[in-house]
Image 1 (cartoon, rainbow, N blue to C red):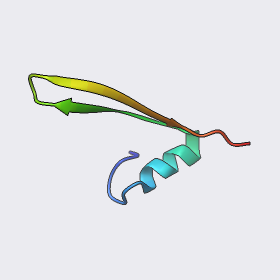
Image 2 (cartoon, one colour):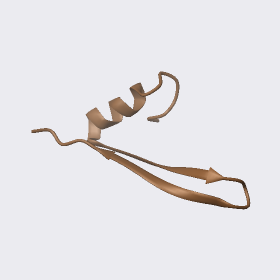
Image 3 (tube, helix red, strand yellow):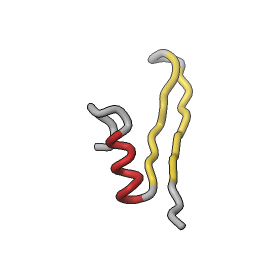
Image 4 (spheres, rainbow, N blue to C red):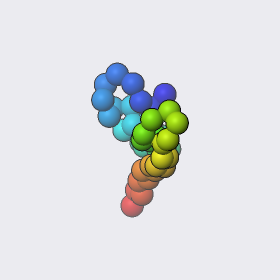
Length: 45
């Protein structure tokens, strides 16, 4: 799991391991919501 205790540490580990982290943020209520996909990638020189 990339998200959990430790704030952004899990996301940083996922980025370090695979260079990619993605999730979907759902905003709204149970009957009316909007999905917002979020992807973070890193490019090592």
